[in-house]
Length: 137
Image 1 (spheres, rainbow, N blue to C red):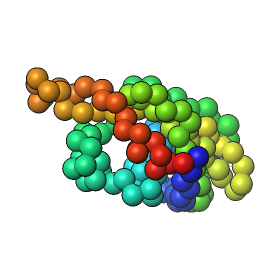
Image 2: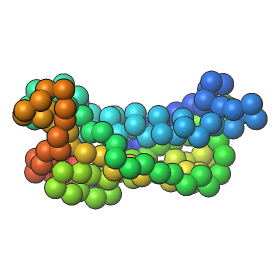
Image 3: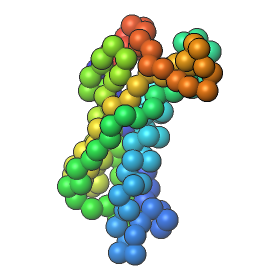
Image 4: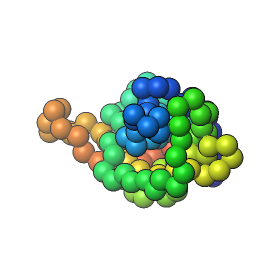
């Protein structure tokens, strides 16, 4: 299974008064990493909407374990991979490294969302196309 890695520099606004990353920012980085992960296999948002009619991947569950703190000016590495495919959902695993040490482990369960056929203001879970799964192999 392919994975995706990118670096993030911790800015002043990412931290609390003690200069430690304010925990919700990890979830922002997880979300950004998921988007970039899809783009890395040729599946940007425009392609997903135009070719597959996907509206997005809403999160139905997310959690993290914070092992070591990251501080202002640290350069961290975010590594993301698909942990599990289900019919209509998938799990994205995230690991953040700081100075080559695992500092955060996170997981998001996301739904393959489509426009609801009877009500355009609503979404419904759609079946994830097999070719999407194969793009990550």
